[in-house]
Length: 305
Image 1: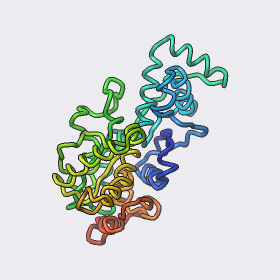
Image 2 (image 1 turned 90 degrees about the vertical axis):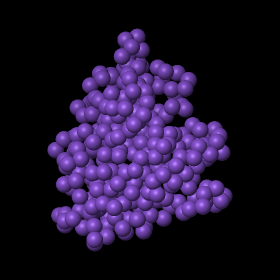
Image 3 (image 1 turned 120 degrees about the vertical axis):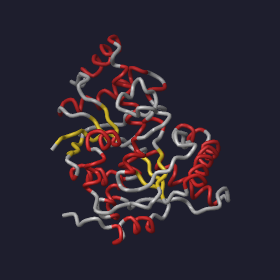
Image 4 (image 1 turned 135 degrees about the vertical axis):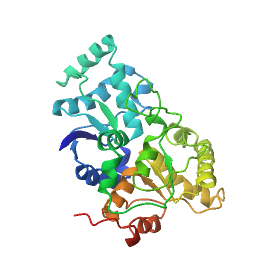
């Protein structure tokens, strides 16, 4: 079984541990063994070390990368920000002077960045290394007839000169759509597909502006897709869609019920027959009805051992 280093970051284990459990269920079933990176720390996120000192940022990020290098594995993360930060840090280490300075700091804790481990997002591993055909073969339930609106998220798309394993065209993202289609679901296009959801720095500095941007995206989804659920591969986007829809509803800024939101591996885990109480248990929006529909007897393809 192929091994890959699992870098969880902060959001997923602290705020959405059921997403983590979905990783640990589906990947071994698909032939990939996630290996924990013992001692991993924050990536660290854009608003912290990268904003005040690039070398300090690279020291902290590259220390995480060296944990995977020691194990001889690549890194897989389910957080778009972590993917972006680690990818950028490795890119910055192409500068010889910075690499020398960073490795001098790492040497004080007996570590050295070599650059031998590649950085992947969960979506890239599923799309490129597992593939749609193997995903279809793994399904216990078909999601045919269900409509999914996808949300890729910003930090998995740009800058394209750094994210070598990302989308062919970041202005027309296809990876998440194709992964969702592999479950049998329909994935309609909508006009604000590549737009930001307003999470991250905007939400922390100007929450009302972030909420306005989010509402515009949500209305585009509702009016143009009539989706049964929203599916993302960004933990921050997941939190935004799950937390902010009830706020809009309470304020009377939307006239429809919040749309159930999932991280993609949760949807895949449900379609593969895993227990919802383990892989999709935590959300502010009630997801029980759509989970029941996904795992209904009429959708049963085969029994899975």
